[in-house]
Length: 111
Length: 116
Image 1 (cartoon, one colour):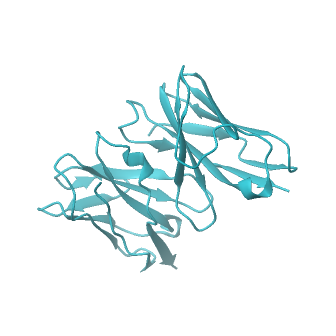
Image 2 (cartoon, chains in turn blue, orange):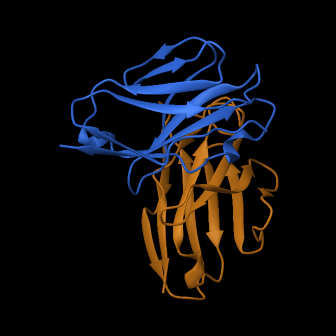
Image 3 (tube, helix red, strand yellow):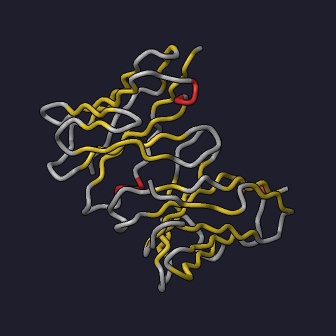
């Protein structure tokens, strides 16, 4: 059952890039890397996901290491609204992956 | 992205009463929905899997008679907290997926329950 490791908390300054790391050294070949975030008093929000190649969307970029044992969520310009808990989860279509919300990384954005 | 709604967003009730929370997928059909509970400063904990047309599947330690789940249609699942007690006060969140439980989940905004 592949797990992820994230720092408990990180700080960033407004309008600066943020790199949120995630280690998943036991990832299997069929595991997708998913990122969600949860703003205060809201349900989690899907951010991005990928399998092997780096991915970009309007919210963020996902950089996946060549060996896939780690990944980094990149927020290009942090805003105060990006302050949230960010969860990195491995999705294996053969398992109940949606059970695996760990502690995540609490991102604080300073003005 | 897909939209999932929950109602009510916040509810306060007296101890011993029952509370129903609705979860709707607004722009897609969902044969499976999930219910989570989240205590302050803690992560989400999966409570049960709601299956349209059949019984829900509960996680270990979750009382099925206390947390009644009904998946009446492909767009609606309800969670009823029966005989609520103060320890049931929590943030309840549902999720659903377009393609199925193994795909990307979309979460509702959550329901804050306070039992007095």
